[in-house]
Image 1: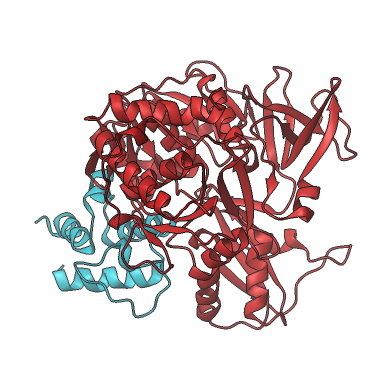
Image 2 (image 1 turned 180 degrees about the vertical axis):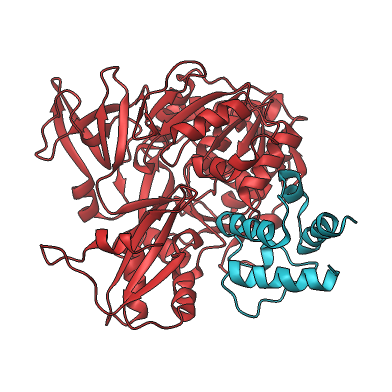
Length: 82
Length: 500
């Protein structure tokens, strides 16, 4: 899976979870940029990521996710092994 | 004679500023501020307030996650004043409504781009002022310490006035529970300053020379707290059970071995969650504390047992016995005391109970009453909580008796959400807000609107502009007409059953 494909899929998950059509995410996007990003929606987002990319998200993964770019790095590692 | 507020708050706080000057008072977003630095900010803000002449007795305080906000609370108290918190993430219109209700002209803000005509505390520099750490304006315990505005069913927030006597009685009660905090502790402050558990969180730490760890705005709270527990070795903290519900899938990964004591509060506390939390927090004493804002933070508590059976009702841990300064009774619908283990409304009395809502005679007449119990006439507060007394003397919580819900620990009048939804439709359509538990046992709000189906985006945007984020419904349903019950009232039970 290319980085671009990961971003594309992740964008769909963000739009679905935060109920925001056309939401644009970049490596620098963080909770501060999306008002709907709360504990509840974040839990839903993590669930969607697990379903979509087929791996279990660990607490230490989430703790390292300051920005979307960090998420993509983890997903890339789990999905592509690098 | 020293006031109780001075004995329990100002004296130990100022003693700590001197005794622990080089120790960490606050840890905010990874930055450590010593008690000396905190003392300097308290002095600077006191000097700034003195220059204004002290006309106002109440100051609105824009609450930020910064040293000046905490320093300002103590500076105001030392100047004989009270604070009303204004949350920067809540709609400006709501905050301005609160300021005008209180009628103060004094607003303190620590940021340069304040939306208010405010005293910018950030610009204040202390000039000498060592004497300001050992003296303060003598103030009667009847004077206010803070006013917290909570959701009001008429669409206008209502202010709970908490006096210095209330806060002192609370601190006295708290220390009598046997929880011990000293300067070696690292304490958690995971609540917004608009919510009264924050007052417990910072007072317990900062009157004992301990370090206080705050949670910045805009963070996923449960993750940030998990990180603080694990990386900073938090030893004591109050949390809402919902925060642990979020963390529960990760308990086996979380190292909470430094946590000595943990208070669960602000929501009903599920038994099964606590069993799992005991396994994760292996060295922790766990307490369930209960209380409405009107009785100053907490009024009953139950210490859970790690080995023995814990008392519960429908899977909810007992709220335990009254604190030292609280007298609790359970009333039947006709206003008489219940007998045996009958259910009724929990009503509380004592020095922790507020003198009333700010300028709200109607609400005060409804919420407070006098009753003679055991030969003593006392003034009680109706908590609105349905409870019964177990044979052990512990109080069992069975739910709300009215239309309030708790979301993330915040008390929400569903009527306030309905009011704003109706306003959006120019009062032409009815709206019903219903609290429900989602699959993770967390409370959410669904809004039903009697209106043909449409894109809810503009309704949601309107509600976001009027209400704090936790009050904005997470689901919107449109119905052509509401189902009615036998009394021709909207059938809320049927509507609730439609929530998926």
